[in-house]
Length: 120
Image (cartoon, rainbow, N blue to C red):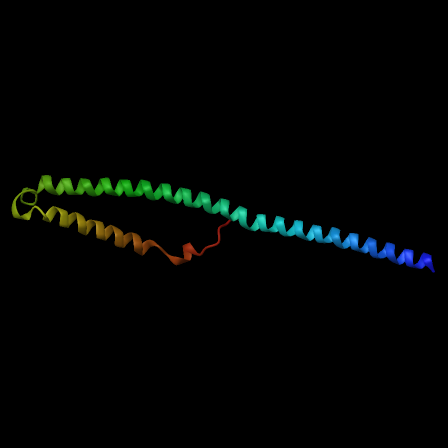
């Protein structure tokens, strides 16, 4: 009889070690899966945001210089807009051009592109 109890105890101990090993494997798989599903997409999002921010900065600077050029053009070519009681008219023209560009930009933004899954 003592041999049977010793065999049962050895089997229970062996099964407990296997359960511990499989539990450790499960924890390791969960860690790897979490890294795969979070770190990879975050790296992609970081580069996407960096390129987007650089493009927005360049586009904003370019549009600001263009609008300043339009203002100077109107003030130079149209004397009444540069002096006197209509000096505000050049600024109004630039404001209208700015609002038109803003409206065009906002019309071009589509939600389908914002919700699109990235392709790798």
